Every structure is written in C-alpha cells, then in structure tokens.
Length: 174
Image (cartoon, rainbow, N blue to C red; front, side):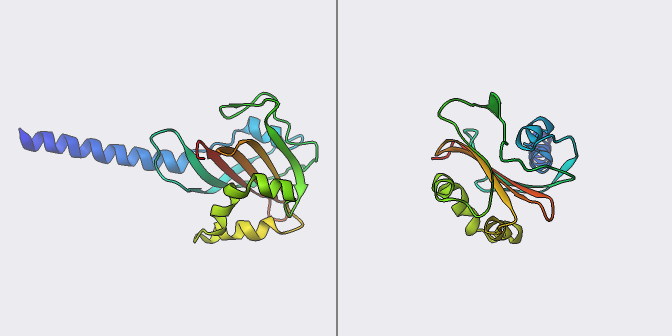
C-alpha cells in the first residue's frame, strides 16, 4: 500500500513539475491588444523569442522578468504608447507616468525612474540580457515605459534594425 501511495505521489510531483515548466516556457504576457496600444497602427505579427525570470518562483504573485519579441512591422510614434484604462492588472490614473517612445539613450528622468528596474540587467550573465544594455545606449533605438510606483514598472526597448522588442515587467517588488 505504501509503495502505491509513494508512486502516486511521485507521479503527481512529476506532473506538477512538467506543468510548471510548460507554463513558464509558453507564457506570453504581451497580448495583441497591448501591442496595438504601444505601437501606432499595429496589425502585424510578433512572437516571443526568449524570456528570463529574474526572481524565480514567488508565493505572492510578484514577478520581475524580461521578454524578447520579434515584430514584423511597427511604426514608432512619439504619441505612443496610448494606454487607455489598464495595463495588465494596474489601473492607469493621474499618478501613472507613461513615457512615450523616445530615442535612446535614456534621459535623466527616465533613467532615475527606471534605475532599479534596469540595474539588474547590467549584472546579468545571460548574453542576450547583456546586449540589452548595449542596445539601450544605441541612438538608433527607442524606449518607452509605464511607471506606477517603485515596485510596479514596465519598460520597453525597441530596436528597429532587427525588429526586436525587449519587454521588462516588475510587479510587487520594492
């Protein structure tokens, strides 16, 4: 009887592990509706190419992760993003700071607001994350952000040459 219970428990643990890995690799936080809010007239295609969880498993729903996307065609407009009511679970209100698409490198206010968000990436050992810092200083690229407070931020870096979007999400971490 103990062997059967142990076997059932082992199967449940393995299935849970497989589910967590599958969920992590297939999760995509950027919806096509959100892509339309950050890029003017977007109706094209995009796909996630890489992602990295920067804090690991959290029991409080916190997250700090970065995604790399490839877009077919986008138009960068200094009037965007145009987030109307909500971004993920955060309501847009008068305290929300929305940084419109601006040429890199970041200005002093943007650098100050997003300092804690961007510092972690400069220390990363992952090659594609190291490239982020280089891309952020490339004057041909553009950045934008949503700043709710120190613990809830979103940052976008778009590289027109290779049509890549870096999307950083930080939630619940102060």
